[in-house]
Image (cartoon, rainbow, N blue to C red; front, side, top):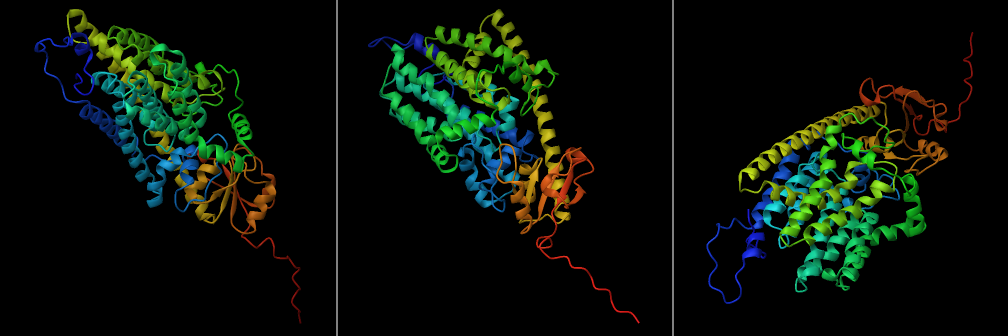
Length: 521
C-alpha cells in the first residue's frame, strides 16, 4: 500500500529525478489512493463495534449523565464541575428522535468509524498510506477503543481531535501554502476543548512551544490559531462556570476536589492495573491479576522509539517526534497528577503513538530478505497474540456491561411495581444511573452530584414518590424516618439493597384524628 496522492511515498522521496532529467525508471505499480484504505479501516472499526460491543449493552453512570441532558422523557441529571457538554452535543440529534439505547449505540459506532477515517485522512500528506492504515488498525483494535467507540463518552473524540490537531499543525508548519491546515487546526483544537477543556490545554502546549522555538516549525502565527481554537471550544464551559459555579477559578477548584485533588500522584501503576478491564480504578488497590494485559503497554515506548528511527531513516522525523511529544503531554495529568486511573483517559496518547508504532512495525516486517521474512513472522505472531488478549478483555467487559443493564432494568421494574413512577425522585447509592432507567429525577445529598438536602427530599415527597436506595448493611437514612422499606432485588448487583419509599403524596399532610366509638345499645 504505497501512497500516490498529494505526497509520494518514502521510496519516491529518495528516488525522485532531478529537474530536467528524463522519465523515471519503471517501478512497482502504485496502489490505490489513501481514501479507500482509510475508509475501509473506519468501516472495519464500526463493524467490530456492531458485532462485539453494541448488542445488549446498557448505559453506564457517566453515560446516563451525558445522555440525560438531552434524551427525551428523562429528567436532567446533575452536571458536575469536571464535565463538559461536547459529547452531549454530539448525541443530541439522535436523542431528539429516540431514547433507545441501541439506536444511540449504532449511531455512535458509525460516527466513531467515520471519525477514525477522518483523523487519519488529515495525515495523508505526511505519512504513507500503509503506516496510516496499520496505525489506525493498532488503535482501533485496543479493547479500550472498541469498548468506548459506541459509548456516549468524550475520550475517544478527544483522541481524534488530538490526532487531527497534531496533523494539521505539522502540515501548516511545514507547508505555508496549506490553507486547509490553517483552517483545520483551530477547529480540531476546538473539538478537543469542547469535549474535555483541561485536556485541550495540555494538547496545545507542545505545538505552541514548537511554533515559537523549533526552527523547522517556527511559525508564531500558529499560536493565535491554537489559542483561538482552545477558547472557542471551551467558551460554553467557561460561561457555565460563571453561571453555575461562581467563576472559572471556582469551577476548576471544585473539579479538582471531585477528582481527589490535583497534585503529584504517581498513577502509572494504576493505569497499568486498569488495563485488566477496569473502567474506573478508584481507589486503584485491586490486584494485578493478569499481567499479560499490559504487555503491549510496556512495548509501546520501544515501538515508539523504533518509529522515530524509522521516520528519521525516511527523512520525515517530525512525523514521529511531534506525535510522541504531544502524546506525552496529554498523558501527564493522568500519569502524574491524579490518584486514580481509567484506561480511557489515555486514548489521545494511544492514538498519537499508534502512528510511530506502526512505522516501526512496518519497517521491521517490510518484505525483503530472509531476515525480514523471519521478522515478519515474529511480528505477525506477536500481533495475533496481542489481538487475542484485547479480544478477551473486551469480551469480559461487554459481558459485565450486559449484566449491568439486566440488573438496572430489573431494579427499575421493581421500583415501578412499588409505585415509584414518573414524576419521581431517587436518591442514594446508584441513584443517578438508576434514575435514568426508571425515568425519575436523581437528587443527591452528598458527593459530587450534591443537588439537594435531606429537608429538600422530604419536601419533594409531599408532591411525588421519593425512594432512597441503601446498600447492605446500611441503616435507615435520616430523611426516611417513617418511610416504608422494601427489598430492591433478590439477585445481581442489587441483592441485599433496601429501598425506602415515601408515603403517598399528600398522606403525610392529612391530620390523624381519633376515631369516635360508635354508640351501642
